[in-house]
Length: 179
Image 1 (cartoon, helix red, strand yellow):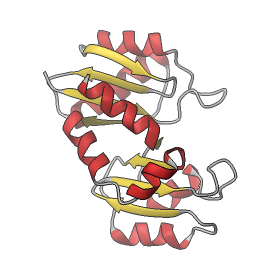
Image 2 (cartoon, rainbow, N blue to C red; image 1 turned 60 degrees about the vertical axis):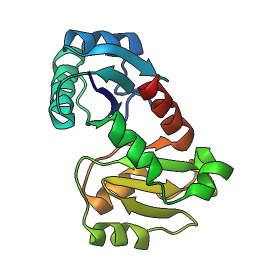
Image 3 (cartoon, one colour; image 1 turned 30 degrees about the vertical axis):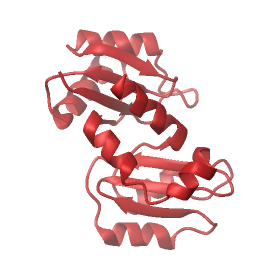
């Protein structure tokens, strides 16, 4: 069976949208997914299934809402899609020199280039953004915590939900998908 990663958006970051990883694994198994594993506490779920990514997104979003009371976007990528988005990274130097400040942001839908241009115009610091396929790549050379380029601003400008993981986490997900 093919391997997939599901990324839950905005879970376990503050007092809202809390879910224990053991509960997430149990929910995924009860939904018919197999070889289910979680990675870190930020809603990364690796599993095997016979469905398409789009079907799995709907399945997991419905299960989270019904069984855990969580309404949050879920982004699913197959192992080959995940490896392809890592290969497409337009910031290879930053991946080597400062991987914790390089983010990969899979998106729920394709973006128009105009939306990315609008986002780039809204950047007031030294951050950089590029689009490859259905993924945004963001570099935060001065750190993410104080940046004005927030998830809320990004989604407002592009109009499409997504969820970001830093390059280190993205590599750990790749290893879990092949392991």
